[in-house]
Length: 139
Image 1 (tube, rainbow, N blue to C red):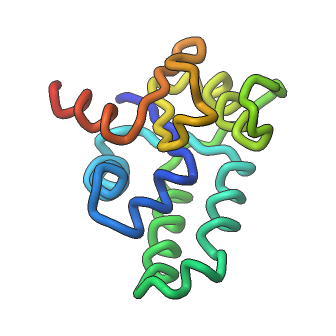
Image 2 (image 1 turned 45 degrees about the vertical axis):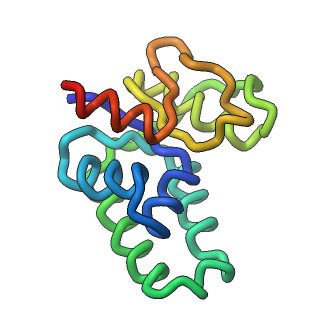
């Protein structure tokens, strides 16, 4: 089974609109078609970002976010990265590459193309949600 890491922006987008991020999270990750890889640091970031007051204006966002995070905590493989990297300009995003290094994930899915200019980190292919969706629907 392929292993994936979801950047926080993908999780947020999946809860706001029915685009590629939504299909990836709800129709692929939560259905068990791929193995989600997480670290406690990334899960903490999910919790912090998804609980921001600006999202409370979106109907049902909070309850859906809670459901998604609960499922993530049950289905994900958790890793504790043992290296610290300084590759990405936005220092907090380095935790995703650290997780990729530790988990040997197949894909890191991010909508943050400004900071993630790499197409690959070691074994992990870094893709936008659209590119990932197109890749998996070709299988």
